[in-house]
Image (cartoon, rainbow, N blue to C red; front, side):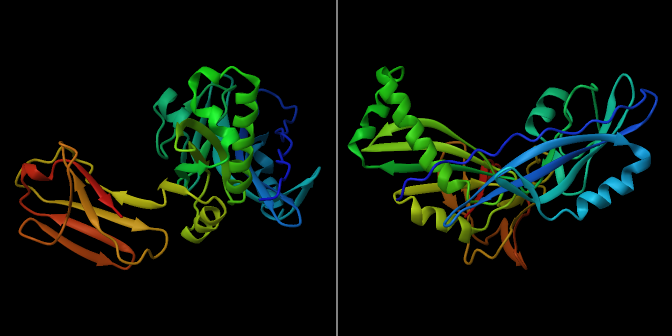
Length: 308
């Protein structure tokens, strides 16, 4: 792999007009996809920007942004702008709602109990952040056989300069590959373990990704395993727990055809068994959606359902 400097796009600040406090304002949270065009690699980074302006110019502003397909910012290019959040403002609070296809961030949900796409009231100085409901989390592990990285799995070396240098090298190599994915947001190293050196990390994407795009990353990062969350949407009954003897339906819909799939159940004893059509379970498929219907269920169905 050739060495390549990691690109960090410049921070983009929101624009704020000087307005009377009596004027109702509309806030837009924007997702910026920033790409740096080079000979072999495009690095991407998502930015959240909050704009504040008079409600009377709403249509003018949104039309202007909608027509911006490319904006040059220093050495980077903004290639996609999406409106995610609408707010109205007064002196004591702002009332916000997520646009269709977006939900509140985990921080907003945790700190304000504003979850999914429900309306939310925030303090004027707080940032309203709705993110794509198709965002993806990747838990990965990659094995590095370079002996110079062996220092990383020894906890006692954590405060040394060599440890910090090697850890940054690993982070840069991983970010270089994953930042080629369209909605790359962040990569965090969780731990190092022995086996040459195995790096365990989490990647956050603020949008969806295809299996083909992930396979390209895997081909570059040999000896890697990736487990994704968010690519497949599993729908479960809202009225839980479900009483014995009732009926329950669980559906699983991927964003693209995955070929032959299996349903598994992991019970309370952490034992995993395949789910097949039988007396209580019926497996069906509707286009891309795989469905498990449980009828007259017993306590043996308590556990975690997996769709692989």
